[in-house]
Image 1 (tube, rainbow, N blue to C red):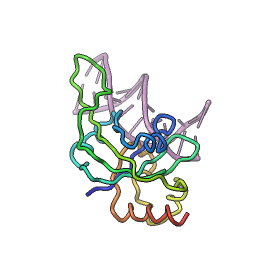
Image 2 (image 1 turned 90 degrees about the vertical axis):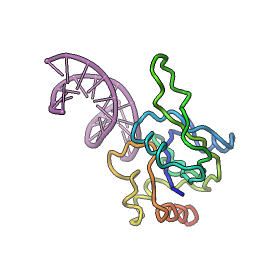
Image 3 (image 1 turned 60 degrees about the horizontal axis):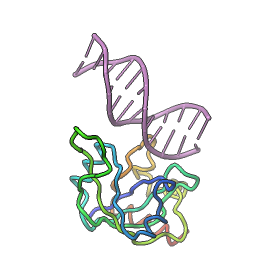
Length: 143
DNA sequence: GCCAACGTTGGC
DNA sequence: GCCAACGTTGGC
């Protein structure tokens, strides 16, 4: 069982959109490092936080689970080339009553190694430890 | 909107 | 395979 943080711009796809749909395909990943993680390390049953990026309120908005293995990303449209990209299906679990902001996480010393907080991190999906996952969950209650 | 930090591309 | 130029990401 693995734990993840997955970024999305809420103007494109938000936790509210996922809540309405219940399930969705996490597609559009166009980074080989991220693709390889999806292919090699993501498993059905993994847990993931939904992170809102590039917006007014940056931070973790809720929880979802991974409900499929990596499969071809059908949003890739380039006939003549074979499709290197992958997607996974996710399912809504919960929306946090209050967003856990980036600043909240930066102010938490035990989260200082979070990849998402490192300068220059542009990976849309990063793995977190079980410990970090639990610390974030505890923040959702204490804020 | 700015810009640093990456990733990708393409000529050599 | 090197590396400059370019494009993209994403916090601020």
